[in-house]
Image 1 (cartoon, rainbow over the protein chains, first blue to last red):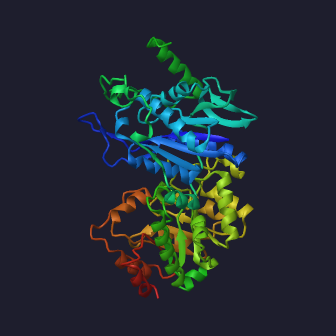
Image 2 (cartoon, chains in turn brown, green):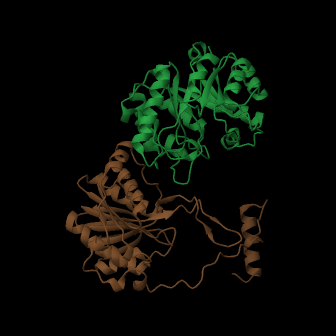
Image 3 (cartoon, chains in turn yellow, brown):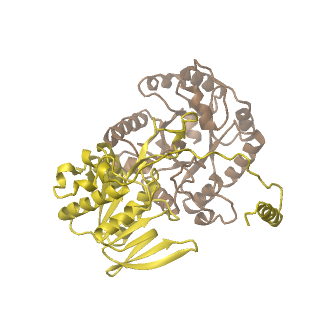
Amino acid sequence: MNILVCVKQVPDTTEIKIDPVKNTLIRDGVPSILNPFDGYALEAAARIKDEDPSTRIIVLTMGPPQAEKVLRECLSIAADAAYLVSGRTFGGSDTLATSYILYNAIKKVEEREGPFDAIFCGKQAIDGDTAQVGPEIAEHLGYPQVTYALEAFRKDNMLEVHRETDEGVQIVGVKTPCVMTFTKPAWEPRYPTISRKRAAHRAEIPVLGDDAFPDIDTAMIGLKGSPTRVKKTFVPQRKKDGLMLRGESGEAAARKLCALLRDAGVI
Amino acid sequence: MKDHIREKRYHIEIIPPKHNTDDIEADLELFREKYLRVIESGYCVCLTDNAMGRMAFQGHETIAELGLPVPPEQVMIHLNTFHSKKHLDEVLDSLRDMGVKYLLVVSGDGGPRMMRLEPKDIGAEGAATVTSVELLRYIRDKYPAFVTGVAFNPYEPADFEFKKLERKIAAGASFIVTQPLLGKNETVDELLRRYPDIPVIVEGWMTKKAWLLSDVVGYEIPTDADYDPIATLRELVRLYPNCGFYLSLLGFKTQYGLIGDIWS
């Protein structure tokens, strides 16, 4: 099985602070990390490989040259090969333009690696939180997609997917090739090993630059290919008047909470 | 461990390379140099387990990757509760197979992307969470060949810390390593009175950045801006002649050559 995992380098939001005066993100000194949801997608692919060692896992990212670091991280964890999409004409792309570029990149990587049976993505990146790129890649490719996946298992020429729903876990089957976006499962991804880390340090990572896509529609990439317009960003005002119900039994606290919500017209 | 004290065998802490290192080869080379220097000095290498919650490679895999020797009396491995059961058993199996004898069992600092043992994983269903006590019991029952030690934090309220220590000793701990001391400490004095037969290793804080100690012990520790680690170690050796000494953040270039004469 051939699995492509799309990943993104993001700022570590656990380290981000807000400038209280300007209400903007303080990015200085904030480390960049592998988007955690992409880590779950990589782990899901690694678990399929655990069952079938002939599985190949390829990782792909789009970003500036320094995004290569997350590709090396993926190589140190489970990936067999990595590709970086990086070019000036791709800068300023919104999710639609990004998914179009990635679609073209997937086709380009398939020329080297063979056709992919599945494209795994994190459900969203923790910096943009749009959850759009994975489903848009599926649309560009014309593949079926499964969102909110927790885990995937190979079953003949299909994948059985456990996906998170409001009610619990839904099990669905999907024909390959397909696209899946992964959410946080009950487990944490495996750690890198030293031997893989050393190999990743030495690995050659091909860069797919502007000239790698001679047939790409330039009207659909970069700023001019991005219909998204950000009208305003702001930090939500913090509400400090929360009420803690202390010293109550569970039942009494629940009754009191319901009464308060009724009084407030919430229920 | 009593032999370590009698033979004046320092315990020297080394931190394995971090997961997010940009140059694993350089970090491994530095690790190799430090490790071999400690071994050749006849001291005991102590390898941390994701110290301060920062993800790092495990001691056993670093040793194995570099093919380093493991003299049983000269290697101590820290082990905390932030592992999956599968990973914990892999670590313990590897340590046993490579001949490691000493484990320092601690609860650990944890981190946002670390796994944590669940009570049911290690047969501790009655416990709310897995602490060093439950982990000690598990190791005692499943891996009885290891000699286990525990941490003692003299900056915690003494009653609380002594009760915890009692549970740790009941769970199998046979030696104690204190948190770093900057001088005479009444709680450690009390520890030595209460447990005269259990080897106690006093930790020396070997960086001049004394203010960092507060982050490690979890309490605000008043420190001197002109903190002198070597002078402090000399004083600790004088104050605690029946203890061993564990040195964290030791400067291998500037300090290593000085410590031999201090405890001799």
